Amino acid sequence: MLDTFFNIAIMRAAWPILLAGLGNTLLLSATVVPLGLLGGLVLALLARSRSRWVRWPLMAWVDFFRAFPPLVLLIFLYAGLPFAGIELGGFGCVAIAFFLNTGAYYGEILRAGIDSVPTGQSEAARSTGLTRGQTMAFVVLPQAVRNVLPDLMSNTLEVVKLTALGSVVAMPELLFQARQAQSLTYNPTPIVAAAIIYFALLWPLVRLLSRLENRALRTG
Amino acid sequence: MIVEAPLIVEARGIHKHFGALHVLKGVDLLVAERELVFVIGPSGSGKSTLLRCLNRLEEPSAGSVMVDGIDMLDRRTDINRARQRIGMVFQSFNLYPHMTALGNVTLALRKVAQKPRDEAEALGLAALDRVGLRDRAGHTPGQLSGGQAQRVAIARAIALEPRVMLFDEPTSSLDPELVGSVLAVMRELRESGMTMVVVSHEMGFARAAADRVVFMDDGLIVEQGPPAAIFAAPQQARTQAFISQIQRH
Image (cartoon, chains in turn yellow, brown):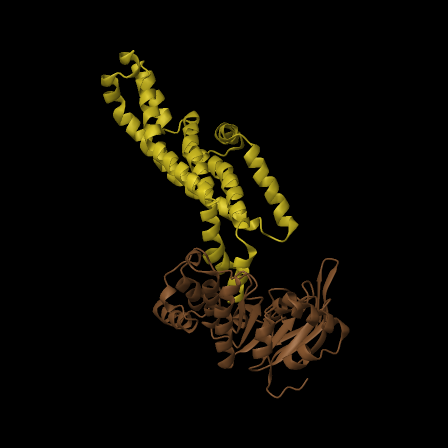
């Protein structure tokens, strides 16, 4: 049992491969999370437009990418688009798919955050001569982000976990590397090791998140 | 109405519709420099909306608004520059909860008046000093009492050295024992010669400090005059009814 799942020799041999995978997972997360946040911010700001010609296509966009399974989107980009002569590569596909998918989620969260800030806040800011943009940047957004911080973090957690999908398009992230090591060694130990690494990476975030959520509950 | 000083606020023929609701039905409000005009009337009479039309937080449906010689409704007017000259204080304070008292006061000084940080902070501290809260500069709004919060809000407005101050029910959400401190600051402002338009139910303050009381009802100015005349001998039936009602309390 120990030799099958916790084989020390195999663990040691697989370690460099797994580390490279972890590096790629972190790199992917560090690309996709800011991209998604940026996309989400743009969506949230556009959602406040007074013109229905902006708002309706936007709602359709957000709905579409929230309903579209990210795995299907990813495989479409990776395996479907080359038929149209568009080759994005593994990293490009994951980055774009996640940007579209998580951007829509971040956008909805940020929109709710912006809505949660009382209109009196922007009225006070505007009454002192701040422009619309300054009011958003200095008064509304900081409060909006604080109000939805647990949701933003929870979504970020999901995004980091979803980077494992990169393995299906041969993106050498943690899960892909673990499966490589597994097939090289005919032993599941690398998969167990990958699971432990994921846990070690995400558990502190989960703890922080539940502390934030508890605090939010207490302060109402 | 007799006005000796030059006019600083000239709102003429103001109409405001909210959908089917006709909230202001042709209101003229002229305010002379250094005048304190008190606007009273039942809730829903349009007094707050009128105030908010003066700095264009509400867009009038019709009419003209000139403040300190600037046409507030002209598309070519830089509204953000114009608003620097018009301070506003709100019923619910609307302090920025994520900033300290000093941060609240210096934000517009830095971003609108474009003062460097140390100059903005010096001006901010001076404004807080004027409302008696210099020692609360580092406190966040959550750590202030309602009366202190409203005084910080006044400091935030006066730090920009406005030509006119608008007060929208500044004491209505305060506990009774905290009202006095805010009124004291308003009285000090008045004595320094600030032009003020005040929407409020503080009749005692109106009697003591106002130059003119304007009574509004149903989107119109029904009657106006010196406080003594309006409170002691109102001419219109609607004013009489309102005055007698509030004096019973």
